[in-house]
Length: 127
Image 1 (cartoon, rainbow, N blue to C red):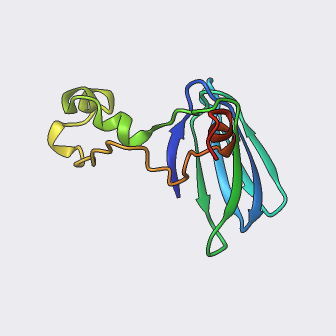
Image 2 (cartoon, rainbow, N blue to C red; image 1 turned 120 degrees about the horizontal axis):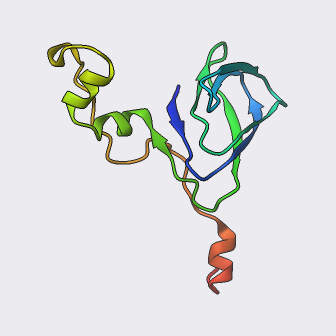
């Protein structure tokens, strides 16, 4: 599963090349929409909409992702939760401090796609 995350200033579009998955997107009003994606499907997520992707009935999923910004920026729930004081989280979730789980600290974006664009090297005169 790709953890719940959002791109603050970036819209996302994707094409499913292989496999299938379930995608859930939350709109600014808090409404959740869930779709089942299969080979050949195209999806679009507006800027700043939280979303996540789960592989549900295939061993893996391959898809192409396109962004409307050269560096999409990504805020995952793990990183955002670990950035806050535990006291603030306990108050937010109306629970006792000792009842909160130990959230893992994530110092880097867990997205494992290299962000290399061969056109960038060409524009700089490199080959």
